[in-house]
Length: 123
Image (cartoon, rainbow, N blue to C red; front, top):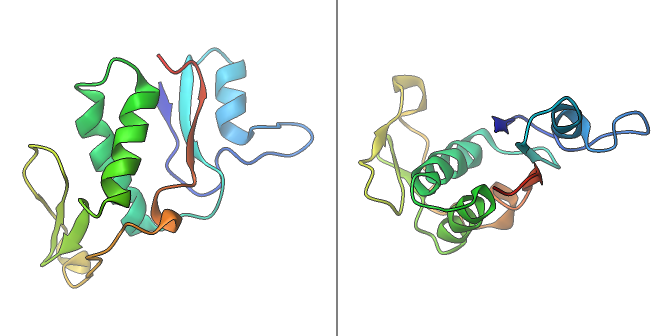
């Protein structure tokens, strides 16, 4: 699996319909996680951390993504007091000092999580 967490990595053109994600799958990667629009760095941090937490327990990658997106939708992933807190058993992630003052106590808006998709095999 290849994770492309940058902006518009699943958005392509006539030469690469599914962007970098599609190219990766065409080159032999079984699946690629990528975004279809410009994404927030803070939201992406929350989603990716939550995704990897769920990936340990999910039978398929698509389910791990779905669980991470649901956790964000339900307001279980927040950035507060210099920490990223998620829904899982993972401890809070302490942010670097340059990000310590960021307060995103509501990452539930689809802007933060809905732009990500899994291309290729869901397993």
